[in-house]
Amino acid sequence: MFRRRRREQPEQVGEQEPAAPERESGPWDADEPHPNTDRIDLGGLRLPHNPDFDVRLASVGDQHVGVVVIYQDSTLQLQALAAPRSSGLWDEVKTKIRTQAKDLEEREGPFGSELVGEIKAEGGPRPARYLGIDGPRWFLLGVISGQGAFDEAISAAFVEFMQDVVVVRGDEPMAREEPIPLRRPNDQTAETEEQRPGLNPFKRGPEISEIR
Image (cartoon, rainbow, N blue to C red):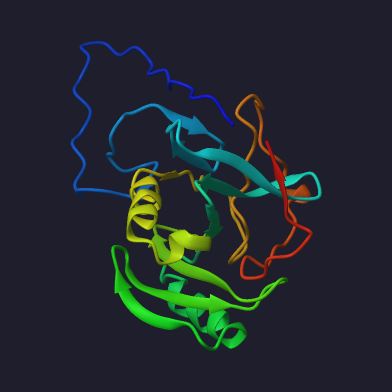
């Protein structure tokens, strides 16, 4: 489980108060005003620190491309993808998900349209809830699995967690749906462009490992 890391603010002449957030909650873009709280800095994602959650990096090979958040007997998988400047990805992503899981129901949730139901998995069907957020040049996909997909108390805790996530897209060119690279908190640099692999964020398989 990662330990929190306080972000250090550079000293400024005539210290100014940070701009107030224009929205009540996130997920936040790193370049917009957002609450300055303790967060786990993973490079492309900054996650709220909560001792009740076990946070692990999800990897393909030696590249960190997502996060698994464990709470009680449920999990929240998070992945941030690069998106076009002119349009979001959630409508397109929903279509892809439903071609693989036709029994999912579309409904309105805290972030807008979402998908919920059961999907096929080893050992039998498992509950799943897909939440998508379109941001400026990024898309954040959250997948709640287990009891939390239907249990309101557990899902509310995951939603609150997502509402305080900060996405760091960066200015470098990235391909459409390319995973925004992550790093361990003690790593000083993120992966290079050439090392970034492709990833299907809609398929759960043995190629995704969970690293403490």
